[in-house]
Each structure stands twice: as structure tokens, then as C-alpha cells.
Amino acid sequence: MKTTFMTSLLAGAAVLGASMAMQTTTVSAANFSCSTAKIIVPWGAGGGTGVIFGTFEKTINAMGVKPALKMVTIPGAGGTKGAKEAQKAKADGCTLFAIHQSVLVNNIMGSLKFNWDAFDTVAMVTDTPEIIGAGGHVPYNDLKGMLAAAKANPGKIPTGVSFGATSHLLWILLGSKTGTSFKYVPFQGGTAGRIKGMRSKAVDLGGINMAAAQGQKKDGTLKAFAIAADKRSPLVPDLPTLKELGVDMNFSLTRGVVVPKGTSKDKIEHWAAIFKKATQNAAFKKSMAAKGTSLVYKGPAAYAKWFAATSNDFNAAAKGVKLGRYGK
Image 1: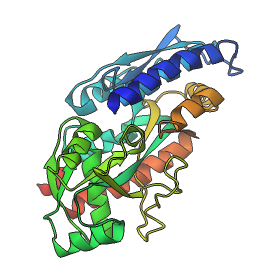
Image 2 (image 1 turned 180 degrees about the vertical axis):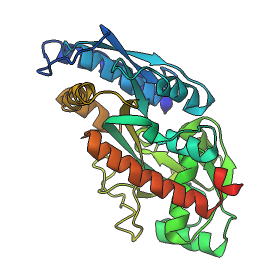
Image 3 (image 1 turned 180 degrees about the horizontal axis):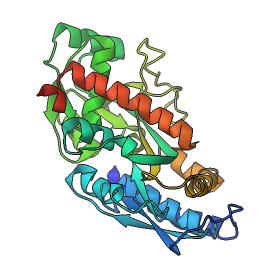
Image 4 (image 1 turned 45 degrees about the vertical axis):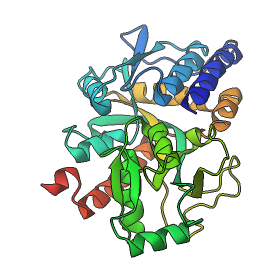
């Protein structure tokens, strides 16, 4: 599954670079001190975020922008190593940071002393919704049955998560919205590890992101109950949203770009315009959509508003179950 997703992403990157080669940006360069800016990705180059931002790098550089953009991976400590490097960088527009909700979770868990607002927001650029999934062996076949089982067995249904990560918060938030609780079983290897656990009957439940779902065999060893998105996905049109089923909740892995606090407005707007143009590339959008990831765009103010609301939701849910620093 993961190999299929990553291989196709990498192949798509080469095509996208060629398709953008003749395009140039109309964005005028702000007064930068660097000829090449770096975007720090706090995970390995072969992971989903690394592959996606590597494609952004190729797409943006094919636009002929100045400064050019180079992806630098600084993996380690659940994304905190790269986050710390980015946060202390000079606020000159020459360092960007690829961010998602892991910053919120790491702050809750105490591994980061700062939160998203230690940066200035530039743009939200991708969205990959989560699916509420289960192993094929469970006796229920829909969300209603799953929630009924959870209410009848509070804290007992084994649910695969990466403890203290976004996959953990998914179920905590679902529990807070539905009056349920689950037995969390830690798994390594992200979505791939959880899928393996559900297939092998080691756990009953787990989150499956849309990108990972595309590589799965339809052999009855997995079930899908709902997608945590505003609307149904054309890739799984028969799968209802949580909201359709009465649960007012969205949950996606949402990637974006931020810069060190204090970066000037003209430099923020420069990069925001460039990433906006990249997200509008038709070939790029088609490539990502086929893998369950949407290219989206929210500018600096809208992205900050989204982060503030999401942070409030995460912290309220964590406080309710005394997770991380709320358990002290």
C-alpha cells in the first residue's frame, strides 16, 4: 500500500515538473537576502509529507520564482526536531516550515514547548481526510453499530493508534462528540501499521487516511464506516460523511506552510501567492486527487483562523481525557 502510494507520487512529480517548465510566476520577488530559500520538512524524504513537498519544490521551481525553493528534511522525535529548527530560524523569508497537526499534538503531549502560533502562517495546501475503519472480523457493519458497541463496552474495544499522535486524537475527538471511549493499542508504522493490525485481528478499529485507502484490496478484511470530511469523496462515493450520520466532526491530515514569527508581510504574501499558484496546477491537482489528497488553498489569515479553531478542539478533547500535559 505505502509503496504503491509513494511510487505513484514520485512518478507524478516528474510529469508535473515537465508540465510547469514553461510557466512563470507573475509574483514579484520581495527583498530577499537568499537566492534559494529552504522549506524544512520534519519527516523523512520518503514519507507522504516529504514526497508531497518534494513535488511542490519541483512545481514551484519550474515556475521560475526567485528565490528558488529547496526542501530540507530534518526528521526525528515525531517531527519536533525539524519544528525546533524552523522556529528558531531567522525571520527573513528564507526559511519555511512544512507543518500539520502534529505540532498541536506534540504541544499537548509536552514534547514541544511552543504551538502553531510560534510561527506566522503562509498557506494551507493539502487535505487528506480520515476514514473511520475497522477489521473485517467485527460484528457491526456501520457507524451506528460501532458506536452502540462502544457505548455498551466503554474503554474496551481495541483501537489502533500511534499514541499521542494525530491518529490518537481522531478517536479522542470522536469519543468526545459521541459519548464513547475506546481501548487504545499503540502501533508503529502509521496507517500501514494500523491496517495490518486490523487485518490480523490484533485490533478492531483504526483510522485510515484516504491516501492509504486507495492501495487496499477489497477482500473483506477491512470495513469503512464513515469519512471525516465535509462531503463525500468521489473515490469512495458510497461512504457517508460523519456529519451525514449525525456526528458534527471533520478530521483530516492538513498540510501547510508557515515561517518564523516576525517575518515581514511582503515576504509572507510572496510565498502565499506562489503556493496558491502551485495548488492551482491542473496536473498536480489530478495526481493528488487520484491518491485521496486534495490540493487546497487558504491564505495567511484564513489558515491562522483554521489553526486556532483546530487547536481549541484538540486541546478541549485532550483535557477531557486528561491526555499529555492535562494529565498532570
